Structures are given as C-alpha cells and as structure tokens.
Length: 455
Ligand code: NAP
Image (cartoon, rainbow, N blue to C red; front, side, top):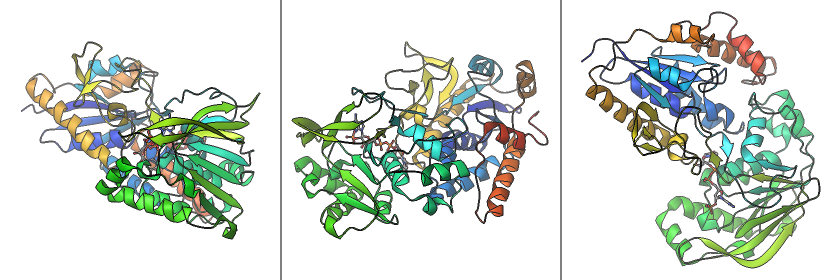
C-alpha cells in the first residue's frame, strides 16, 4: 500500500460531489480529496433546487455540511472547471477526477411556440425563487392563468410556488427581490398538465398532499380525468406510493367546486399532452391533446384538442445535464457515458482516471438519498483502479501550483462559513432563520473577507 495519499479531484459540490468526496475519505487508504465548485458556495441543487418552503429537505444540508466541515475534504469554490480551469489540467496533476456536475438545464419540449416569450423552463423559475446568482433579479408574474407541464415533483414545486401567497413564504430564506416578485403576482389559476393518468404520475405522496394544505389555495380536479386502465391498476397494485397519490387525487376530484372559496386555485389535469403554445409576441394559450392508455402503460393521442387561455407556460418535464468541456458527453441523452462510473469515450473505451457520479451519470431521477449508492458505485471502481495501478498516489500536493498557474484563488470552507454566518445574521435582523445572499459578487466578497484557499 502506498504511504502518500491518492489525490482525487471531484468537480461539483452538490449532493453527488459531496457524497462522492465523503465516501472517498472513508476508504481503507489515505485519499486527499479536492472538491471544485463553480459557484462561490457549495450544495448545488439542495441550495438552488429545493423549494424554499421545504426546510425539511434543507436539513440535508446539515448532513452535507457535516461531511464538508469534517476537515478531510478541501473545498475550492468559485472555480469553474472546464472554463476557468481546463479539465485536462486537473487530470494531469490528480490521480483521478470525478465529474459530479448534476443537471442544471431543462429537458427540451418539442412543440411549436415553445420559444415564445412567456414560455419558461422550470429550472429557470426554480433558480429565480431560490436566488441562484445566475438567475435574473426580476420575474414577470403578470398572468392570471398559467400552465405547468409535467407530473413530477418539480411540477408540484413550481405550481405550489406560483399559487402560494407571498406572505406565506416570508418565514423562509427568500431574499427581498423574490418576495417582492411573488407579492406582485397576478396569478389566480395554475393549471398543471399530466399526459398520463393519476396512477402514472411521478408525484411523491407527501409533496402532493402538501398542495391541499396551501392557505387560500384550492385544488381542483375534474372527475372525468380520473382514468385508470388495466396497466394502471397493475402499477397501483405494485406501489403503495402510487396508491396514495391516486387516492389523494381521486378524493380531490370528488369535492364540489361550488364549495371552494379560496382566491387562488391549482387545477390538476390528467390525460392531456401538450401540442402547441400559441401567441403572437407572447404566450396566449396552450393547446393539448386528450390521450388514452395503450396496453403497455404509455398513452396515445385521441385527436381531441383542448385549449387553455394561459399567459405563461412552465415546462417541468425533467432536468438535463450540460456538457463539461473536455469530457465525453452523450448529447442525445444529456449524460456522460460510463460503465459503473468509469467514463467512456466515443468508442466505448474507458478514459483512464476519469469518473462520473450523480445526475450527469444516471440522469435526473431519484431522490437525494439514491445519490449515495450511486456515488459508492463510482468510488468503488475508482479505488479498484487505484489499487491495480501501483503508481497511483505519491504525487506532491498539486493544488497550490495548479491555482497559481491559472491565476485562481478558490474559496475554501472558511469562506462558506462566513457566507453562512452572514446569511444567518441577515435572517436574525428580520426574525428569520436565514436570508439568502443573491449576488455572486456579494457572496464572493463575504466569503473572501479573510483567508482563501491556498492549500
Ligand atoms: P420526473 O419525476 O422525471 O417527472 C417528469 C414529468 O414530466 C413526468 O410526469 C413525465 O411524464 C413528464 N413529461 C416528460 N416528458 C413530457 C412531455 N414531452 N410532455 C408532457 N409531460 C412530459 O422529473 P422532475 O419532476 O424534474 O424531478 C426530478 C427528480 O427530482 C425526481 O426524482 C423528483 O422526485 C426529484 N424531486 C423531488 C422533490 C421533493 O420535494 N421531494 C422536489 C423536486 C424534485 P411521463 O411519466 O409520462 O413521462
């Protein structure tokens, strides 16, 4: 066994990168992990993808914080690998590099009108309400009727955030500009469209039931949309989660809309697939085609079209990863090709010393917990390869020279602690737990106030 450490760079400090780094430090061998992050702060989608009214998921940050703060992982934030620092430069000086950059984009929806102003990918809206530094400051919530396409948890987040009254989000960590944007919203009706039935929806039961608890928002479901066939019955029989989801939706469909008094509504529509978005200079309506089940659990169009006069359309049909310059990428599947975490090139050959974990490896599915087992698979392969190559390990610490050569000064763990402290102070001043800092410059300035990473 080599006495000097195996040196591994992990790219991306979201859940996948942090889990990967943490597992690497727990090996039966000395492993030095440097965790690179393009933003000035860590946590990726947990900080910039989880809705602000979901603090219990934010508790995951506490677990990730424990791993990052343990002193065994070096954080180098504010350094964009592939942009500020070529991937090859990393591969030259580290024994192994793991790419864990997640999924930051929206899956494309190919319908006419999708590029009209007023048609948005969910990830852009989520970035806005989560105060991502690359998001715009203002979001035009100027339509009364809006559509959300998709039947997953992101669609639920988007629909809930659109329908919720801004005052009910005040106790959260949203900054003032997001609160002001939500407070100015004209929305009264949010229409969520699932192309399949209630049994096939990708909602989690807890997240779905939460819709029914939003103050002054009614959930409206048309009983005619409660369509189940033999394949959906089989799905329900196999999954308790699906049974709870279906039961919840059916119960909502049985309520009399005449008894509903809320000032805003979320309408859940099923068995309707988007066909086109219409409008001259801006979204004016969304047209969908009614669907029916096929024997294999998918759906097909019936030819019956239905239009909704909506002023905005949000596409929440799944996320997609972006290529990392210098790494192989399957542009069609929007993932890095791999074999159990070992990156493959265009010929299907293993790229020595390059690994992948998280959503850019397996696609944007699964709750955060599933990222752990995925990271473990990648680390297991990496360690197998390191053991097989006797020359792995024994290199001098590459970080200071690497940063110097590229004129970079990363933000370390101490920098995040300063941002964390400042955000809590901002919260304290207003009787809230935390208020997020929005601007990248401000975050960097707070983070860099004292020492910076110089290993
Ligand atoms: P998702 O769970 O994969 O759901 C995507 C939805 O989009 C599905 O209902 C899918 O319908 C629909 N869809 C796909 N293509 C479509 C098209 N062309 N037209 C109409 N509908 C289309 O993805 P997600 O909502 O982005 O969530 C990603 C992951 O993050 C999931 O694992 C989710 O559970 C997790 N997440 C969790 C939370 C939480 O609070 N726990 C919050 C956000 C996200 P089909 O099934 O018919 O393809």
